[in-house]
Every structure is written in C-alpha cells, then in structure tokens.
Length: 440
Image (cartoon, rainbow, N blue to C red; front, side):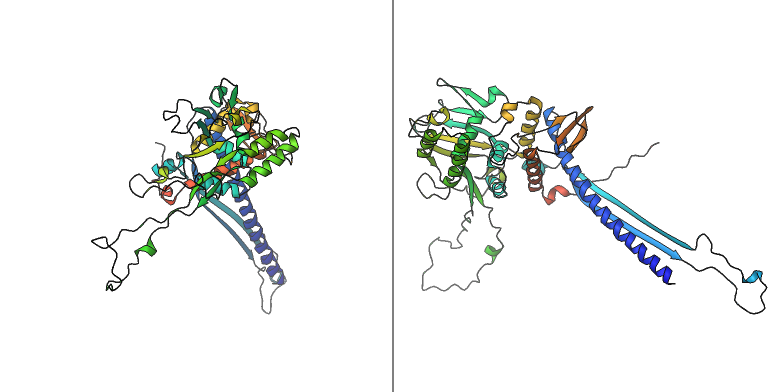
C-alpha cells in the first residue's frame, strides 16, 4: 500500500507539470498569434488588400489524470493444495494516465462601432498616455502624424493661398514641397518637432452646466427655503473624458538640443537661434496664446470624432533669428499657424504598409540615438525563415521581423496592439451565430 500511495503522489506531479506546460504554451501561442495578425495586416496594406481583425474571446483548457493500483488475487483458507497457493501479478495491476486539452474562441471584429473607432483620428489623450509609457517621441510623431500644414494667420491670408501641406508619406512628391528658397520635407518637420519640444498635455474636461429648475431662471431669494429634496442625478452623471492637446515643452526641447549638439558639435549658433524662437501653446502656460480651445457643447454631433482632442491641433511659431534652415526661417516674417493632423489606427497600418512596399531607406531612417538603438522605423525582411521575432508566410513569400534589433518595429507592434484594445468595446464582442457546413 505504501508503494501505491507513492505512485499516486507521482501522478499528482504529472497533473501539475501538465497544467504548467499548457499554461506556458497558451501564453506563447497567443502572443505569437497576436503579433502574426499585426504583421499580416501590414503585409495586406502593402499590397492594397483588405485588413482583417480578430479577437480572442476565451481560452479554456482541461487537464485530467487517473491512476489505479490493485493487489494480486489469492485464496485464503485451510486444506488447500499447492497449486491453489500460487499467485502472480497481472499486467493491469498498476495503471496511470494523464491528458490535457484546450480550445480558443475567436471572433471577427466587424461591427459598426469598432470600425467607427478604428477610422477615427487618434486622440491626443492617447498620445499623452503613450508618451508616459516611455516610447520614443520621434516614433510616436512618425506613427501618429498624418500631415503638417503651415499657414499664415487667418487675418493675413483668410483663403490660405500661401499655405503648404506636408504628408507623412514615403513618396517624395507627397512628403516634400519645393519652394523658391529650397525644398522642405517631412523629415525636416520631424527635426523641428524634436528641437522645439513638441509634446502633449491633458486636462480634466469641464463638467457641462446643468439646466436650472427655476421657471423664471432667476436666483432664489436668500430668505426662501426650498422644500424639494435635492436631486441625486449629478452623482450618477457620467464624468466627461479628459481633453488633450499638443503643446511645446521647454524642458524636453533642452534635452533634445543637448543630444543634438552631441552629434553635431558645430550647431551651436543654429541651436541658439532655435532657442530664441517663440512656440505656442506652452505646456502648462497661462498666456493669451497658451489658453485651451473651448470645449464644444454636448449635444448632437458631439461624439468621439468631434472631440477637441482628436483630429487636428493648431500651433503658433515665431522665429526671431535666422537659423540657416528653411523650416525655421519660413516663420521669420510673421508667426505662422502650424496645423498637425493625426492618423487613425487604420491609417497607421496603411502607413506601415506603404513603408514596406516602397522600402525608402532615407524616409525609414530615424534620428541618431545615444544608446545605439535601432534607427529603422520599420524592419521587415523578406525570404528569411529563421531568426525571427515573428514571421509569416503570405502569397508564396516569407516575411520576417528579425529577432535581433528591429526595436522600433517591435514597439510599433506593441502600440498597434494597445490601440486595438482601446478601440474594442464590449459591444464589439457580441455573440455571433454559428454556421455548420456538412458534406452531402
């Protein structure tokens, strides 16, 4: 019996090992599937194919173990012959078994609310959240920015005839604008954003005023005592979401200028001219050019797409000393209005797809890094089946994100994964009808 007890204890250990290995296997498998889905959609976007989005609703697994032990049969009693006193161990005296199974529920995200959120510009509050997670600011600017337009103040050019627009696109004719003084491209705007300290900030949105219950809309007399109980509806009112905007942070600008000077020791005069310029709004500033825009009144058309924190943000720049670089010196005669438009999550996939299809090395190159980090915005190698962080076969080709390096690509995957989670609501996870196809 002691032997049987030890055997059962060994079976329990088998159950524990089975559960542990299954848990780790599910963790690795779902991680691979999530990253594979992101890479697949980037490849689809590079070939102008429809994107496909799935969600894993549930992971279920079971592990069972069974063991049996029995003693051999023998006869007990007096007056038995020799043959009746013999006994042998049978083949089924000791037995044990262990089994583990699992299933995954997958649903296609194809609802109106999901695509409405997927196609809406990224909110500046989301941008602020990503900045606080330690992602490089240049990576966020390159991923989230759709275009940058430069215009004179409306009172100087109401029709915008002297305005310019630069798209964040690998095609030269979309990212560059040829002026009389020279050419300006989107990469120049990236440098401008870093050295000017372009950042973001959030604030708590103002609570909309509640309508008065007084019929004459006049304040109550101090001598009048109300006999009606106080309404508790205010406590149940949903708190408005925070607002976000772009702004200029002087501390971040000083950090980037110091780093820039380390790589370009001869840029002292240039950086002095950059420092002398005025940038508005200032993060946390209270001046007339730093005030927040008015929040639209709640009502019809005040959904997510009309939020003041999404879509575009206007900035003002006034350069006082020539810098020698056209992107700054364009603002010398008078302060210019800079409008920055953000991309939607869907547009980020299309942008990375265009990078993959065009393979523009110059546009794909990010600025220098102090720690020798990856300088490529997107790194996807075709035809490499091994040594991959993630790989996928598509249209008889193999696409691979290398295991070593490709840090910005891995960060972009993480950002896209988080954006999809932010855009997926419980309403998108409705039960779908099950269709079974049976052969005739």
